[in-house]
Length: 93
Image 1 (cartoon, rainbow, N blue to C red):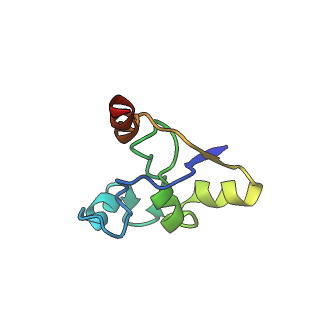
Image 2: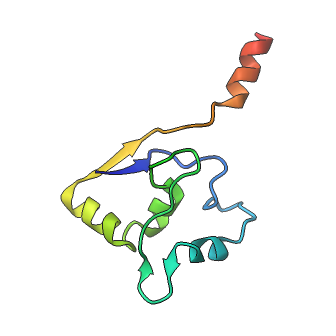
């Protein structure tokens, strides 16, 4: 089973308004000869594929292709960082 984040994080490097150098970041996981050997793990998870990476490259790496064909993609909601905004609202309330 390939776990993929259900939603794209608010701070995802694949958001259109991201100021990060996406090409440089993708080159960290891309093989110059065969393309992506794997996937980028979401920074909110220890195991799940980044949703932004999945949306853009799900057909560009072998595991993504196989998982889709066999129906082995599981969308998860991992979040190792608590929602700071919700905690602030609860303190005021």
